[in-house]
Every structure is written in structure tokens, then in C-alpha cells.
Length: 532
Image (cartoon, rainbow, N blue to C red; front, side, top):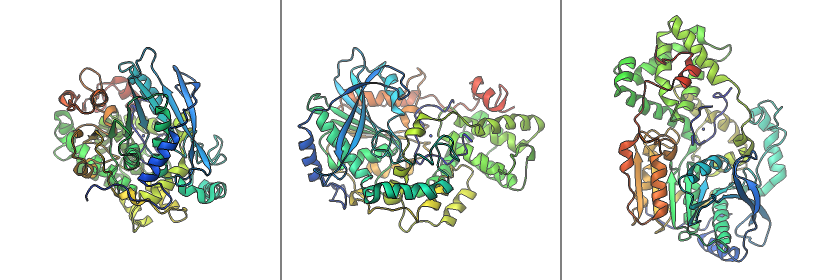
């Protein structure tokens, strides 16, 4: 079911789903490189230029010509002469561009490859051709020594590319057998070292100023890179921020909190407020209470409670800047539940539960890496119990239910000792741009804000876009049809020491609860009016 599978941990909504203390330098970590070791690795790596081969920008073999490289990096940065793995990087140099600077684009997850940035880089290049776009695969994903289970992720397996709890019973032992103690090196610190080493090697033959853009978990990765290589990059951009010490055990609670914030925006909108009444959040909670007792039975699926279907669907829709405004009409219609509503909601239920084609993004996703990092350095101590997390999901009106499988896997996972730097903040003078959405359901604004307190040096700029969701540059469209977030990012690349021009925020298109896109409305409700 399209919106009912276990969702990605910090999956990116980079394109609309029209088809997821004091500053301190990082101390030396058990199993991970300290800043000194990283600088030594950077110096050694800088001696050998990278060999590029021709490839296509899009993994499916489409799109413009690009270049690909497999850069050998040490499995353990503290043993640079030991075992190596491949760090895969794709480079797109727009035709006719002047190659003035390099932008490294770090995907989220953890577990995502660089795949999602392929089309985004092509789109950006139409207006910013003088930038060279570098798209790496985090170690353990894509073509960077992916941690996968071929049998359990086969197309004809129980859940296709997804891995069920039953399949993890064989997948996890297979990962342990294949990698053994090496699994502890598939962490954020080693991935940060990979990035610094790759940039140093590439700069031997292409000495461009290097900028790093991290999105979602990619911000956590980029921040760790700054701890190890505090002066290498000319600038770092963090969009949808995961600060040190974040716990991903609370993601389902975060989705529900974001739903409340979103419905409070609905309350202030003339149309949405009229339809939903003076307290849309209370109306939604009351609806879920009724659904649990059998309200509106004609829209129910066999053996799948409607309140669970809705909470997962709503959490998925909140991640999409185009589709999130359809949540209130679903609530409104389900509460009223007249025959015309039942007809429309049956279309909705069918739309959000249809199997889509196998996704290239999911083929490259590294589920082994996802849980390896989350359970080891993005979890709580003491860990929440399975019953505590189940209670959060049961009481939610929006939840991706991601903690359901996490609860199943946590105790048996071979967790590593987290790098002490995972809870520290980088000590750097590097210019930085922080972009955070006010309606982000995956990295909540209130949880991101502590990052602001630790980066107050010159040319370190914090920007909030009130109505943006997860990934500001994908959810901040202006009246001109352009991204305000992208405009700020590219202005920063042109001169990271110039004051960031935030004037476009005032021109970001407000949420439109009338849902004027009739094609989407028809696909979701079978009508041209989402409400009636």
C-alpha cells in the first residue's frame, strides 16, 4: 500500500508526491576519527586525483551526461592503510557552465543514497549553470558498499523492496555474517571522513571552492563533517535540521505535533476555518475517537481500521507541500459521512493504498545503515519501551508508524558505541546558512532551534520560513513559481560572506485550502471540489 508501508526515517519530500551547551570541537571517538586524524587523512588523500568515468545523471540511464567515480576510502579512518570501501560520487557539470564552485548535496534518511538529488541538480542547473553538482552515496547506501539483503529485498519477496519483521529475522543475521565487527564503521563519523577525503582528492585537480548542502539527516552528516574538517568548505547549508543529540525514537510523536500545528494554520484560514470550525484540532481528535468505534463504516477496508489508515495517510501528506492541504477536507468529509462523502472518501482510500511501481530510490536505500545509525547514535537512553511507542501511535492523528518496526528490531541490533562528537557542536568559523520550515513534520522547528544558539559567528545565518515543510527549498514556492529556499542557497554560494537576502520569504505562496489543482483533487476524491 503506497502510504501504508513503514515510512522512511527522515525521508525527504524534496519534490511533491504528485505520483518521503558551549560550542566544542569533536573529541576523539571510539571507532571514529578525531579532527587530527581527519586532517591527516585529508592531506594524504589530496595527493591522488580522482578518476572519472562517463555516466548518465539519472540512475535509470536517462538525463544529461555526467561523471561517476568510485573513491577508495578507509573502512576505519584510524587505519588509513587498512581495508577500504568504495565511496561513490556522481558529478554533474552543466553544459556551458564556468565551474566556479562545487556544491556537494547530502541526502537524508539515514539510509538514503544521493538518488533524489539527480533530477534536482538538473533543475537547479537550468538557472545556475556555473555550479558543479556533486552527489555522493553515503557509505552503506546506493553504490557506496550498500548494506542490503538481496533475498529479503527481492521484487518477488514478501514486501518487495521493503523488509518485513519476518524477513528481518533472516536479513539481520545475514548482515552480521557478512560484515561482522565492520558494521560499527558504518556510522556518521566515518561517512563525514569519506566526504572530507573525497573533497580533498577532487580539489587536487579541480580547485574550486567547495560548498556542502545537507538536508534532513544530511544536516547531521554535514555537521559531523564540520567537526572533522572545520575549515575545508567555503560554506555549509543545513536545510531541515537534525541537531546533535536528536532522538529519532519520537518521530511518530513529532508527526502528530506537526499535524496540530498545521491544523492551527487551518483555523486562521477563512475557508478552512469555516469548514472545520473554531478548533480543527479538537474536531480531528473527536473524529478519530468516533472512527475507533466504527463511525463511517462504508469507507473501511477489511482488516484495516480506518483511523490507522488515516493517521498514516495524514503523516505522509504532511510531508508533501502540494498535498498537505487535502488533510482538512478528508477530516471534514469523514466527520459528516454523507453518501457523497462516502463516495469521495472511497476514492481517497483507494488512491493512498494503491501499490506504485518499484522506486529506484528504494532500490538504493540502505536499510541496514538506517537502523545501524539510528539505534546507535540517534536513539534515547534509556530507550523507550515498545508499549510506550505503541501508545504514542495509538493516540496520534498523524503518524508514519515508523517506530513499530524499530521497536521490534532495537534489542537485537548490534549497536556500536556512539562517537562522543554525536552530542557536541562543531567549533568552526565556516560561513553557514540554516534553513528551517515552521511546519516541518519530520524535523520540528522547536527541536531544530537549539542549533541556532551554537552558531552565532559572522556569516552564520539562521532563517525560518513559517509555512515551509520538510526541506525548505522544496516547500517555499513564491508567486513567481520559484523556490525561495533555492534562491537563498544560491545567493549564499555566490558570496557566503554577504548578508543573506531573505526578502523572498514575504512572497512565499500561502497555503491554499481551496485546493485549486483540479487534477490532484479529482485523483484523490473523484470530484473537482475537495470539500463538497
